[in-house]
Image 1 (spheres, rainbow, N blue to C red):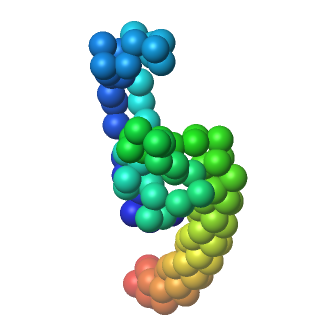
Image 2 (cartoon, rainbow, N blue to C red):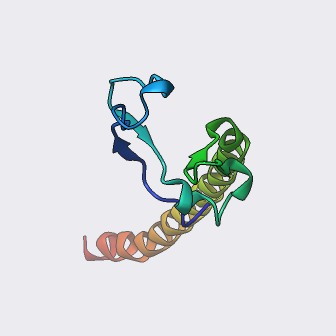
Length: 106
């Protein structure tokens, strides 16, 4: 889901749309025009020309993105574990000649 915008705080234009009975509380959301190219199914344009985001339609997309990120994290964890094991083996191999030289010096 690369390319999605960060969330944006906003206040409803309550005075311009008194019949909508918008909340007075500050809201957080996305800019519909930025979501539309990525997930057009989640954006609609009303007869008044205003865009809106159906956040329920974002849920499946977000769940899939989380699954993909989990898989990437697991793959990176596996790679880190493999590299850590390799480094430990190499360190052990390097330590053997050093230990042998210490014994010879005594």
